[in-house]
Image (tube, rainbow, N blue to C red; front, top):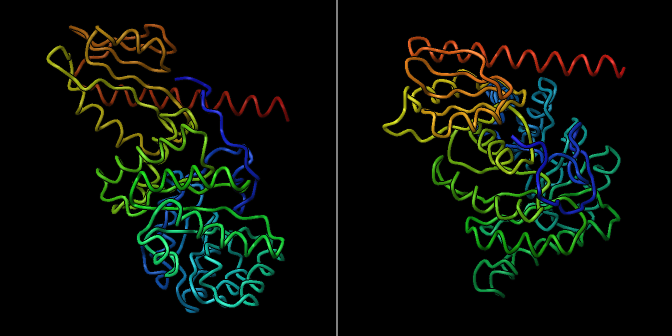
Length: 371
């Protein structure tokens, strides 16, 4: 509903994960991770395509073995979205996926092993124009840090990250991003805030192991919301014990609510009460399901009565206000037509899709004029 966000974002270095810019003022990218067996190429490709359809900017794939690396190469050839390979311990896997066209390597230099192995991975990344993501997690801190701090703390997370960063800085490799994830909101937020003042590289945000769809969405929204409001964060993953597609949906809804991304329909809907002149909840459930494929930004308000309906509708591309004997539809803030309850969802969907096509055509006309 508003073109710009009041949030001032942290200035960071820009890197590229394939075709997607991360940091340096680029739009905050939304990513998820496959949960299929990487060796099952067909299943993994199918899931990646589902994520891409949902709007994923980047997808991460676990590559735990050399066989999985070979499968990753086949997967990479069949998809368009940039892929990050998640690798631990075996540096040879990182070298192989670099040859196979990976768009980003997710490693911890500390668990790759000797300095010569880290150097080999960094050289492969540099030669192939591949950035690295350093991923620190409260659940897998180094043993000496566990002993030093007694338990995971924000300070322990940042110290671990700075160790890994030091590996890359000694090798004069600045093209990396960093995450310091914890399942505890306070720990993760404090760690990210501290790290944001220490480095110029982009930050990958996440509340790790956040929980199921409902609880994980709430926890992630609170933690990531606090950081995003601070202007911290260049790419995000909402970690849910749910279908990975839901991570993408929640991530974009989060960014839309902060006016940091505009993708798909931004619904404004009342919670419904006895004043409603149509079934608001049922209407919204159907509309969200039917219009899940729409990626064009559009503001749609669905309000059950005339108390707040006209006001919200005047600020929307399309607004529905409950009324008797018929509901009033606003288009571009002006009363346009009336809809009865009989075919309300069908009629409203048609109007929304007509508006989407209109906006898409207008954008194409602008591009054609500028060409």
